[in-house]
Picture 1 (cartoon, rainbow, N blue to C red):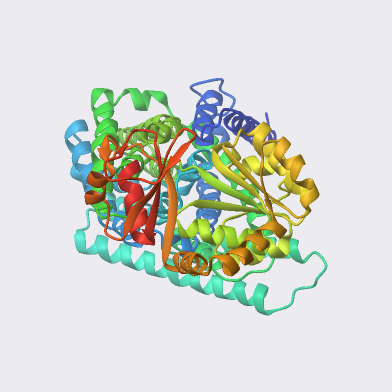
Picture 2: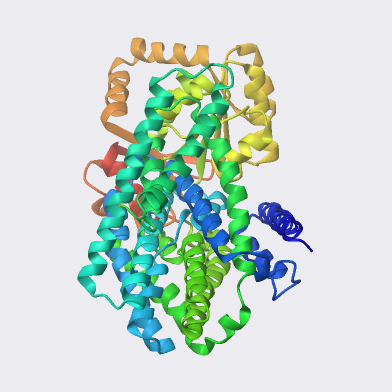
Length: 620
């Protein structure tokens, strides 16, 4: 077989099994990385033998993997938004600094004593295993819709630690393992490569922003040109840093900084750019993971023995929880959310790709070092991806960290006002809107938006309907609202379905489907009647809407259940009160001696912060 024919067969095989693995993972709602790794082993020398090391030239592999990683890291950084980072800034900063140090040193210690390696090799392995990475975190978060603050923390940690691990590993490999240089050289080289990469990334992002946002591109094929310019930006940033400056691994820092900056400025055709970039990244991920896994020798894993298993267990069950709990001290995360973050630390493309390149460089000169290096890193990757990635949804469900969401169909004035009120109470809200201009405006204002037709069941599913407690249809069309309500009730079995009704004659149609119908005309009449007949209550409700809150919750916490209203009041935060107790179909104004039981619904009235603390006390 000629070299060209062999290369064609390689590409066809990799793309074919990779796409099949992606479809299979979507079908099972399991992160795709697990199937890509399994597919790579299946078609490699240890499996069917469809891909052999002889088919891949070492130098070509290095270049292909480098460019692929550039696109992957750029895509992950592009998705990070400054507004989302504000959800957990202190915790995220600690995770990527203090947490990375704990991960590095802790892993190095366990590798040194469990496998009996030199300190140089142990520190190198520890630096590689800092990286969790968006390539493994993002697929997990696509099937496990945790709260925004948790998702943002995991994604940011992955992007930043990819950069840290790539640069630190290459510096340690060159100056510690091969040349035996000291700590000052390591620190200096790390800072130099990181700084050089960031400067290149900032420069490239600035040029691209001027080109797209300040210069008028030809209107014909403008969206396509914008997509191509952004894709080129990732490759140019990587190429300039790596080849132009000649600074190895600074390209990762360049694409990460360029991606983050471009992701947070106003770019035209953003939605088309994001969709195209996501598709390209998916193909690249498929290729890289399958190829790297196909080159793995299972004998390298088996050679580690009990020591390798010990490394995996300590890294996943001791070091990861330790660094997470130390880094997330405070009140922003609940205990269950901290447990979930501790349980989700799979390693991905950066350690896999870099360790493969290290093994190629070591070649036959130091085979024992190469075997230990590759075996340890890939064993941790396989184990963490298989167990933490594959079981992520089950872990989240067991810990009860998947929030029930509210979906609002219709991003007009009513939809936005409702979203503001719900988000102000801490609800997870997604707006579904089909008008592209409205979608762009909503996203600029900080709303979470799903672009599409709310009457399409797949659009609702993508917005989170399978895990929604409320779907509110707020469009100006009664026909649309009725169909949305029907889908929510019959297809997704949502507990509360509310719909705006513009024509009073249509209310019966909504009620026949057990949809709560809110007549716009009647709502205005009620509000005006309150001002006329009950002015004091109307003023009180208006003031409460600005500074206070009213919430009905189900009592699930042992600390609140079985106690009288008087006893409970002693532990509730100052500035809030129990205003109503509901048990079954009975609603009553509470008396001091009334006892609150598990499953009761209580209405809490008071200051916003006090009400939120009371909800946590009664439901935690």
